[in-house]
Amino acid sequence: MMTDEWITIIEDAEDLTAMLLSSEAVAEYRKAHDDVYSDNELVKSIQEFTAMKERYEEVQRFGRYHPDHNIVMKSIRVQKRELDMNERVAALRLAENDVQFIFDEIGSIIAKSVSDEVKVPAGSAFFSDSSCGGSCGTGGGCSCSA
Picture 1 (tube, helix red, strand yellow):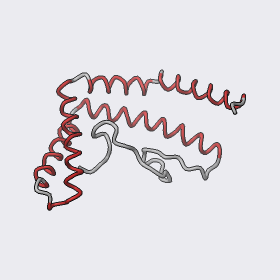
Picture 2 (cartoon, one colour):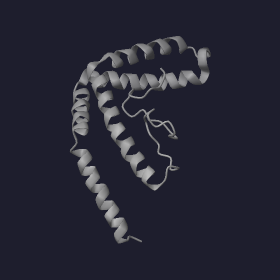
Picture 3 (cartoon, one colour):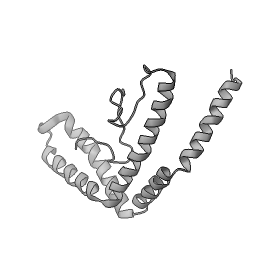
Picture 4 (spheres, rainbow, N blue to C red):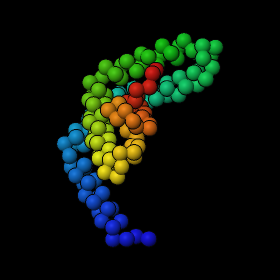
């Protein structure tokens, strides 16, 4: 049942969303995202890396006994290094981290206002009592060891 209290909370959440969307951090993220994904060669490299990550996961199931183990292990390291060294990819990762930090802070403030015992999932090591980490949503932006 929708109460006036819930409507107020939803409206406040919409206001917060509007503030976030108009923030400098989100603007920088959007620019960095556009810089990466408007470059067809870079998009192709990201797609190739994503495909190689799938092969990597397959090889990991069998370990060094997989016939393609050495090739895949070397290829994924080379591809990851190339992406890591790309200035636009690095800028996107930094922008993602900045936006994630804001989300983590907001979540923490809300949770702590309820109770210090409320756990907040956070993608940052800053929140040492978090119950989960980040995800790999950008084709290599996570801290997976490849």
